[in-house]
Each structure stands twice: as structure tokens, then as C-alpha cells.
Length: 55
Image 1 (cartoon, rainbow, N blue to C red):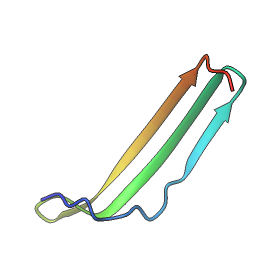
Image 2: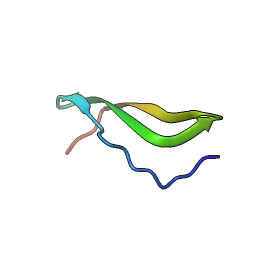
Image 3: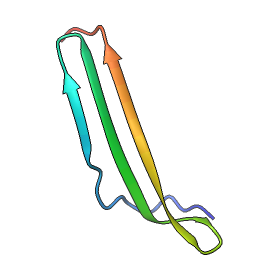
């Protein structure tokens, strides 16, 4: 059963940005998230791409 209470231990990320593009990647691991009988932990990889914006 999935519970949404656990918090990630660490969420390292890396990114790169210029005037017209923004790229980033982040990894999160939830050690207490039960994925099946006797299994614990799940990891997520987040990728982001943004382009054509002006500040």
C-alpha cells in the first residue's frame, strides 16, 4: 500500500540555463515507500526543459 507521508532523504539535481533555454534533472529517493510485498523504496527521476522565455 502506498503512503504519501515519507519525505526524500536527498534530492540532488543539476541544471544549465542560458537566455533562451533551461535544462535540469533531479533524482529523489523515498526509502519508506512500499512497492510490493517485502520491497521498500522507490526512486524518481525528474527532467525539465523550458525554452523561449524572457525575464
